[in-house]
Length: 87
Image 1 (tube, rainbow, N blue to C red):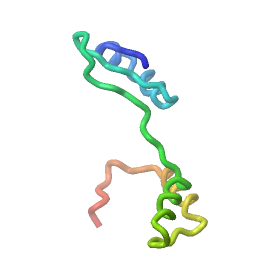
Image 2: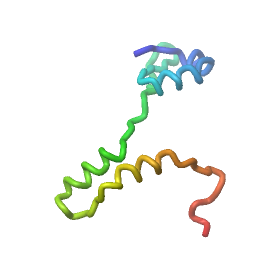
Image 3: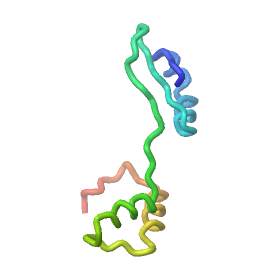
Image 4: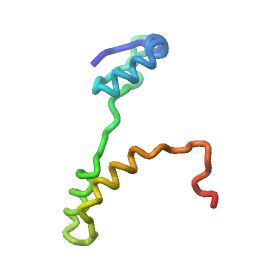
């Protein structure tokens, strides 16, 4: 786990994010004290979600296409400028 000062993390932010995407973790310090961590975001795939739902012992119906549908939803671009609650 790499340790970076807050200033260094700011200067190298794009590289730090690239590293996190590749599985690396970073500790951010300020004045020599640890203040934050940047770690890879957890990722779940459709198969993992389907397995969890199957463990509900038949309380929910999960068909064979469920994993593919979850995976496809994760690849769908999100328009962050629109209001999803506004009809």
